[in-house]
Image 1 (tube, rainbow, N blue to C red):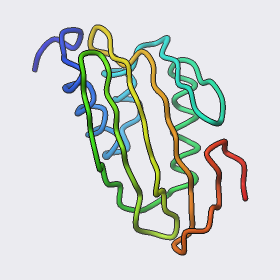
Image 2 (cartoon, rainbow, N blue to C red):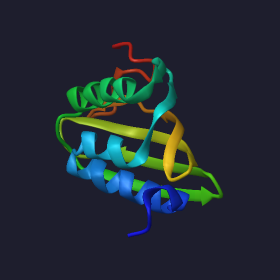
Image 3 (cartoon, helix red, strand yellow):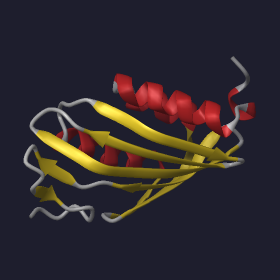
Length: 132
């Protein structure tokens, strides 16, 4: 494994997704996320590891189970883009999209967008976090 700071954007993203699949939020923060990371969402601006912990808590509360599928991953230099869904279980996410800025082997900025629906496609939680 290369020194963490010398990892490529693709290596950081792959490690981040692997740890996310395992639910290993703290290990992911320690390995892949800068202490001063900024995350922009429809819900607001979240800063640092505490902000990311809060976002993870919200997501796991809203989607406690289901199959996560990564549809498309694009990487160019320091940037990455991920399209994803949750398409099983009682709650779904049909439109997940994240972007990442990676510097020195860590995520320094991220955007997150998703809408939570029921199995019939009715919106339950909008991208801004409000409930329908």
